[in-house]
Length: 355
Length: 200
Image (cartoon, rainbow over all chains, first blue to last red; front, top):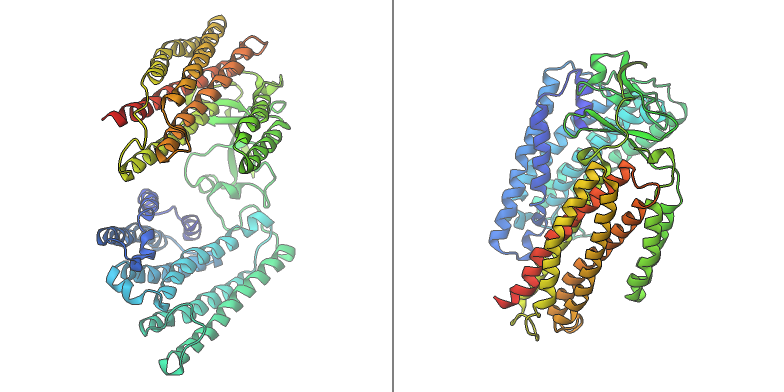
């Protein structure tokens, strides 16, 4: 998502596509080995904890590769500061801060110190809000014209970015300090002599700024959906295929299947879409291609409308619910299920059966 | 946006084999899912064995005869299965019909001997953890034998109808034969663990 937005607004192809993809896969693999960092103080064996510490710290390497590739793309491009890109910039700052505290809490002694304090609350909101919500809001601004056919307001959007980014940081950054000062999570009150009151009040007020930003975002989305200016096919001058069809797209997306020769097809030929023709219309056909090179191989069929999958679903549901009450449901229930599956499979004599 | 036709698909075939067929991919993915299921149940067997003070719990090791007969039939069935696959590839309908009938008989014979495998365990499924996991392993594989037998019967009947010579349906026969290899292969580690594990 971020890679798509960054390339479009930097007006150039992504820098380091291959390392970016590998970093994404690396993040996914390392992610399997870090969930125990949520339970460092539960009394697990030391060896296990160090494995999850290593994994939690190592994930900063692929994450760093991604951030640097995106920065290099912007550095070498001619960035247009549209609202989606502003959200991505907000993501960079916020997510990197969350990553820095992430390396800190990955260490068991430090985590034991700040466990269940506001430091952890600050850390994971920087990661989650910065890493997921900001890009998601950017993506809504980016693809809203495609799925509604109307633009969201650029002016309103800039206010949303500013309110959300500033409000978020004012609300959540002081939580680091509160956590280090010992304020625990999930308490509704505390003694006045703890000295957290002033900062905590500031946090609460800043949360209102953040909430105002979100409110403005939803107001903008609702207003634009009804009365925004028409978007056209490709309002951002983006290079990817979804911008070659109309906004909103027809149910079938494309009348003919596009033929693609690069990762940024619309920058190669902005006004002309190369397509493939020859699929029949009196038979439901779709295309099967080779796995790696996407060479067209077969005109495969897809089935006609049929009641059998529904009957199979009903038979499965009856079997499973019945099996809660009696094990014999598995035996007797499999008979109607078998009948519906065979009925689903059995050739119907339609043109789709031809081979 | 203006479109320019650069590729004509009209000459492509209507049906493909192996990686050009979606049912082939479906069969492969199904093997992956089922294979993971078998691996998990085997892992549970070893886990329970590692916890129990004695293994098998309260029973002698299973009798070898029925399970070994099943293994022998399964291994022998690889030959006719291979022939059915080749005949279906070449579109030799009469041989495919004969081969499928043979495979139906093989599947039926396997179920008969599988029936005797359960009492040969000398324990009920609800006696203890050993009984539960052995019945689960055997039952899980028996489910595969039953479903594959039904598939093979349906395909055998289909081959005698007007749809028989259709390449798409011959492709189904090939996928079914491919899946039979999987049923045979998964049985070998289960046989080793179930029958020879307690004898080590």
